[in-house]
Length: 106
Image 1 (tube, rainbow, N blue to C red):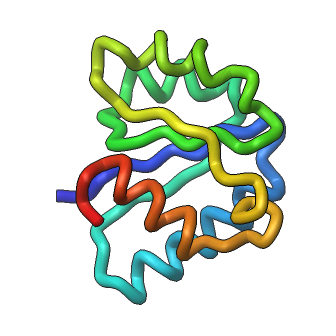
Image 2 (image 1 turned 180 degrees about the vertical axis):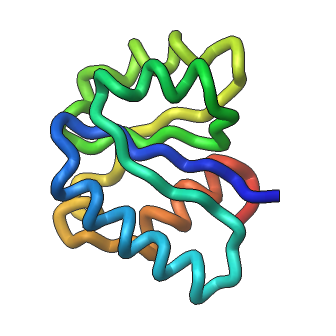
């Protein structure tokens, strides 16, 4: 079953590049994941309408971590902030590995 992983950021440009790198890593590792990026304002609608396996926050919105944890508490969705150096280096492989560990499928 495909797992949905949502990345949350303020605007979406750099995060969409990271999504592409994560998708490449997922394909190379034959992982069934659907990775997408949304702005923090769009994320709320997604949380209500999609079954998410994990939510990763970009370092620029890390201050929203507690807020997101509360929003998804009823769904038991893990939420974490992406490591700043992995984000800065656009290391899709490491960020994907982190997401899979959160989900429990690494």
